[in-house]
Length: 67
Image (cartoon, rainbow, N blue to C red; front, side, top):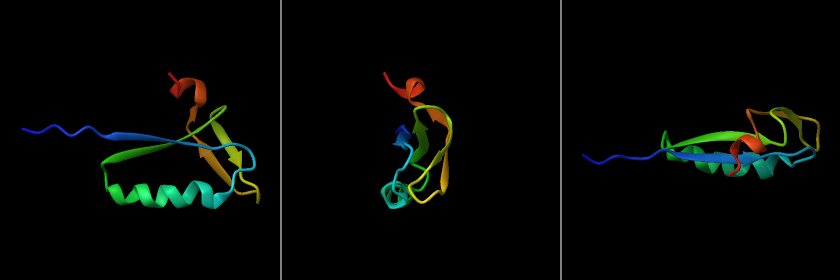
């Protein structure tokens, strides 16, 4: 039996990020179809505004995922 490990991808967001810089790569990773979990990470968990005002929700703080 072969065990497959799921990949955890942390996408770092910060105030003023560019939408395409976040969502372009995430679109590519979505092609892994269940082989990866994607988590948005920021200085603090919570909403983070892009340069145009749209917000993404960071589900983890950087200090929780570093190390």
